[in-house]
Length: 123
Image (cartoon, rainbow, N blue to C red; front, side, top):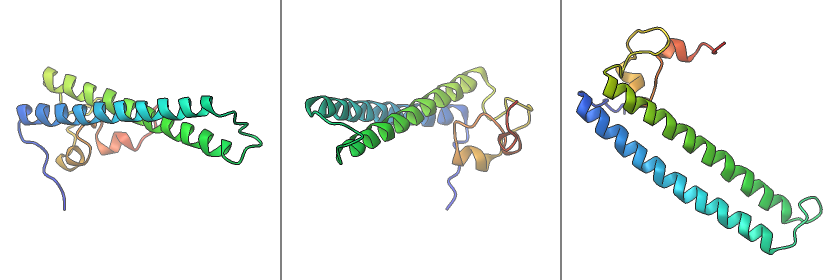
């Protein structure tokens, strides 16, 4: 069932701030998780190449680094969206200047491009 996007700039900003807060909490949690994995790896003499548990530790660390990077990227996208709300340009594609559809904004509130521009690779 599609979710309707917020209808006014105040609602949009509030929704984005809530998203930013959730993302910040996710970053903090994943950072702690990563710290625990790194600390656990330093407490045990593992050799990733020869220890059967070593590859699990390396995989967990790599996965957490990737998830943390994605969360940080999302936080930056949300911050950019909040800046566009404040500038009065939210909902306008930053590449072509056309409106971003309500459906796209409902699915991706921090979207900065219309679906057409999003499907075209940057040069």
